[in-house]
Amino acid sequence: MLVHGTRTSSSIWDPQVAALRARGHHTVAVDLPGHGTRRGERFTLEGAIQAIDDAVAGCLTPPLLVGLSLGGYTSLAYAGRHEHRLAGVVLAGCSTELRGKPIGVYRRLAHHANRLLSVGGESWHVVTDMLTAVAGYSPLGDLRRLTLPVWLVNGARDPLRLDERRYLRARPGTRLTVVPGAGHDVNSHAPAAFNRALFEAIAELRHHEVPVLV
Image (cartoon, rainbow, N blue to C red; front, side, top):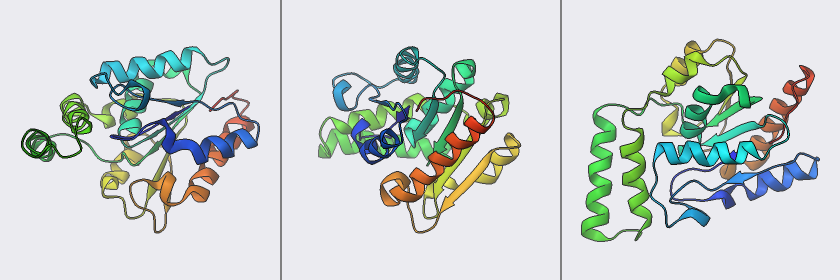
């Protein structure tokens, strides 16, 4: 199950969906509120968690949940509440604690860009909604509580990998893959390397006899 980032949609996963299905893996890409087929909705963390839960409910076996950026944070928040419904979690482009002054500044800038400049049209509303929703969220708090397998996959040039080592310390046994030359959108910048990381995660789950869908 694949969960996208801010101001994109489930279509960013098309190369991964094609590659996974070609290997016989049932694969679902989710649209979060405020994005794609749900563009008319306002984004909230609760709404995003519900969107993931609705998709998980349609799976015959616990899925491997894969999230990029905002999708990574919401996937981790979902796993923190419902890890018994998942086989594992792959988190990409979300290895930074989004708390404190930096996110407040970014939220104010996004608000003014939308109000004064109309940059990006309605899509900037989802940025301010997202930043408001995650401002008090601690991904490390959820990560510390997880017992299911976790993988981190980050582009080497991604600015949101600042807390990689803190993530690894928060949950011993977490696997880390850093993709050379890739930036924040690691699945698009280096699809072959990202797909390889997904296949390795699936193989590891199957080695431990954990049934998995993606």
